[in-house]
Length: 136
Image 1: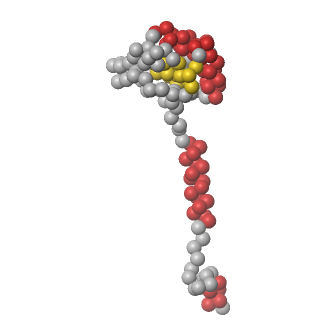
Image 2: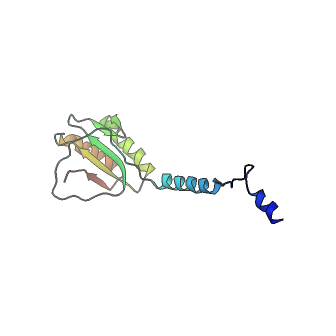
Image 3: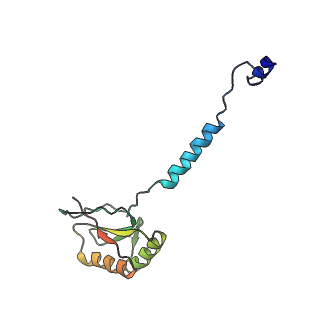
């Protein structure tokens, strides 16, 4: 009786079979967990030379990154944006993540008027957490 039961768990050639289904289930659950909990790096769309500062504070939650180029172009979410449409874009992206703030990456040689336009648009959009990105 025991020999017939032992032979039932063996394959046709007499080798033991290994069931990988539980291991695959665990791997898929871990994959889903890591995808859900991952933080994604947001990019503005262009590289800028940020101004230097002696003191800086890291911002852990960022909803919107706005870049201002040397020539005065404004980039949000990897797209060039007209200065009149900055507020609407900030409102849309901030609505997706209301807990996050705005970080403005202004080039060292950009004009202050463009930076002020972005700052005014973010304040008009109702965002209170606004920071200007710097180099250490």
